[in-house]
Image (tube, rainbow, N blue to C red):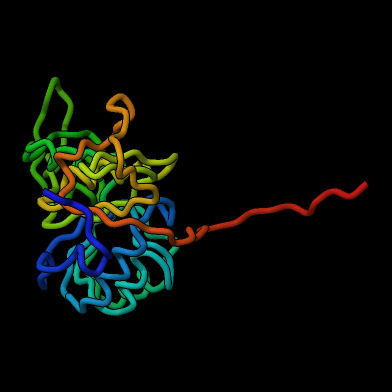
Length: 234
């Protein structure tokens, strides 16, 4: 089965419906599937539940879906760079479920592995635990967290092959592999596609069995925060 599609827009055809859950990889603006996010915006799909480490920044990344009013609910661990997110949350127009970063990562991993839930001490005795079952193990209280399975996952990889095997670069490896396994359908946006051979199996991070569709991208990457210092002169 050919997995390569001509464009991000075409790769999304037949997959998006109102109210669905999207898992989106990336860390800040590092390793986000920017072309696929733009294509989601252009479809006009609405009432989305978005699972992501963060919601981008104003005007970039997942921030554009917030600005277009297409997101109903967010499950995320860090949102401090997005003023539009904060405004929508405080105004009550956006539902938000905050998850500790390690817990969010494990919820995605669990969902991808077919594990419905797990117990963790993280969040016990805090607002994170409100309404969630707890259980005692060896005299310690643990909180039940549920695995996450998304209708569609969108990820960005540095390299891939036609079977959908993927390799990530640096920080992009934090959440993209987890999102990739958690999607019922996963679309990967790849910078460098190997078409005449396959990736070395020892280097593969996400096996192609988890990836149903591929697109390539040549888009320049945004930098969330750039810190520089003046060049020293002699």
